[in-house]
Image (tube, rainbow, N blue to C red; front, top):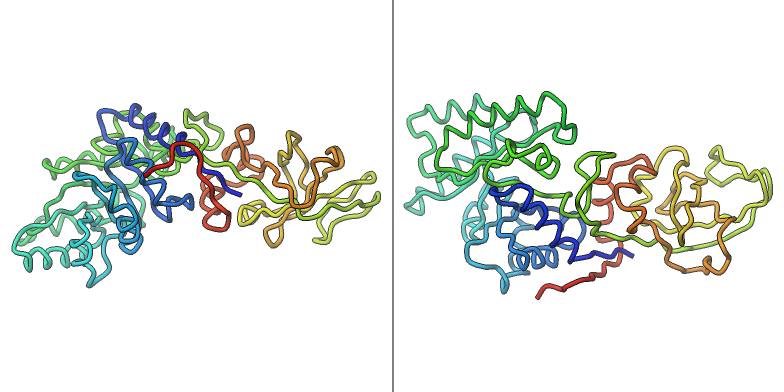
Length: 364
């Protein structure tokens, strides 16, 4: 079971907004708000005062806007990070989305749309300052600006880029990207600038410019592994107890792993859902169950894991019981550390596989 605390989510947005002020804090709600449900998440953030949102795909933007049409206020903006697929520019315009133009072809198609409409159309430009994943390479953008047509037809409302090492605050690449982005920002004096993602927000005001793009931080993920965070925890996950069995000294588990019982042992099999996929490798770490940290004794398989529950009171081990996996004590960051994965992977693995329930002030 996955529980999402909407009050904590709203508080996190307010905290990030204070940290980055006077820049505005936008919310990244791609991939169904990282699996937490884009519709209730966006309604919650709209209620809190957020007015800028980012999704990856045009189709997810359409679904989101239709689901919150009654609550979408004038002046709110939804950006499509991947831009528009060829031929879908009119759909983007019809819904009032702002495409993030990443390639020369996307720019040219947006210009063609502007010519058909008879007026310039707003868009964001992404400059690739080091990521080499999305965005216009500086050399390509320079040639486009120097061409006779330039960027005619494109009203550049936002210039953005993506940091590659924001989760490593002392990495020299952060400053190199900052200086390169500053130079590009100056080429578009009437546009807003956006460089910082969740981790980038914590690099300081130099990185904030006009808009920061808060993603995983909104949902309680720390800016870097092992780094403290002012964010409240938004998610709680409970695992269902599938089976208990007693094993004798010397017995192991069916995955042929290295674990062997050193005493008569009670093993409990938990249904973890896709979170279990990120507990790979040899068994290690512990899971908190009803207040106790229990050793993992087998590699997860088919969304299950086995823990040594010998020290648990049998009263807590009723088949079908829901047991704490991610909670206030073992939050998503601590869970990731204990299982040697990343909080991002844990968060995004939740998806629609768990039954979601919401607590706090439910948005209209």
